[in-house]
Each structure stands twice: as C-alpha cells, then as structure tokens.
Image 1 (cartoon, one colour):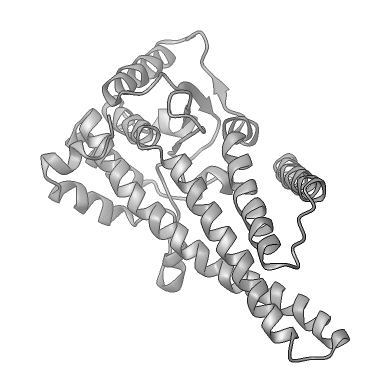
Image 2 (cartoon, rainbow, N blue to C red):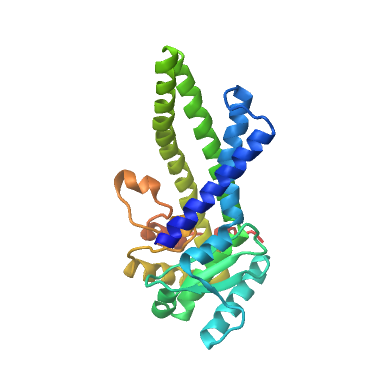
Length: 295
C-alpha cells in the first residue's frame, strides 16, 4: 500500500512540476482569461495524458503483474494464444499478457496504444473460472483495447478537468469582486477549493456514466469474440463470487468486475450491476454484439 501511495504522489508531483515549468517558460499568467484557459487545459489534460502514457508501467507496478514473455506452463500458453487469436479477430496488435496475484476474480486492460496494450488476469480468476469463462473475460478486455477505451476515457477526463478548473475560478473571481482586497483573496481561495470539490463530483458522475456505457459495449465485444453463452456464464460466475476489488483506483475502471453501489453511490460506479449486464447480453441482437468490437 505504501509503495502504491508513493508512486501515485510522485507521478502527480512530477506532472505539477513539469507543467509549472512550461507555464513559466512561456509566460502564461493564470490571472488573465486566456491564461486561465491555457492553465486549465495544461493541468486538465496534462495529468490525464501523462497517466495514460504511464498506464502500462503503473499498472504493472501497482499490481505486481508479471508479463508472460516465455510461457512456462500450459495455462500460460493458453492465455497467450487466446489473446493472440482474439487480437487478430479484433484487428489490433498483440497485447502483452500478464498475471497478477490477487484473490478476487478480475482482469484488466490498459495502454495508450491499441496496438501495444496490456491484458492482465488475476490468479483468483485462473483458479475460479473454467476455460470458456476465462476466454470470455479475455475477450471483454481485448474489446476494451480494440475500442480505444483507455484513450477515450483519458480525453474525456481531460475535458472534464478543464471545465472544473475554469468554472471554479470564474465563479470564485465573481464572488471575490464583491469584497475588499484582503477578504476577496481569502474568499477566492475558499470558493475555488469548495467548487473544485463540487464540480469535481459532478465531473466524476459524468465520467462514470460513460464508463458504465463502455462496459456494456465491452461485454458485447467479449460475446462477439468468445460467444454469447460464454460471456453470460463469465458474468454469472462473477455475480456468485463478487467481493472486494483490490485493483488500484487508477485501473479499476478497466477491470471486468466493479464494486457494489446503491442510491446516489450508484452514480459513481464504474461498472453497471452484473444483473443488468447479463440482461443486456441476453437481449442483444447479433449486430449489437458485432458492434462491441471495432475492427
């Protein structure tokens, strides 16, 4: 846990330092409207894009995933060959295939390039699922890669971050203008902090809504690559064994299994409820399943 926190803080600190240097070199002043837009875009997209570019490296570090370079067992050979076959069917380059040690049934995909991605499965998945179910899970993750979901999510997050930064500071300026200089400065920073949190919450709801939509599509892609009955069986297995998710927050949205949520908390879920995903697969037409993978 300490190692994960250290890596996360170091990554964000590096982004802040780099962007601060860029702004100083180009003389960008956030106090002006144009400067605020540039500042917001740099920080809004900067963090999202740096995280995307580092996603494979951080995923391996955070989970301890071991990439299969030379299969040492029949299971590893099957994993590599299954991903290779599905990648060819989806029209993408061969991803790296990895295994990470975790008790829950889960898998994830990440990477900035759909032709150079990473697909990883947990040891819990290998112990608890049969080959048909595991094949469907791999298909789900390959569909994420083929659809470019990691890049799309990073761009969406960048746009949302930019709007949060701009709106919070525009409103804070308007509030501070009604006060004297000393009180205005204090009010400005207080309003910025509060609105960053409030607008950030709404931005997270939008991002998670898109994430849930993307999961339905990846399920359809998994069904197209492995078979509808296999994908349904895999989700039913997940429903029977759903528990704590040990994936780090940065990559949890790209796992096959999400958390549980009710009421308002459901708005912040990265994955739809499993029963809804199963029902969507059962009711999907063959054309909708084929649309789950962009070849």
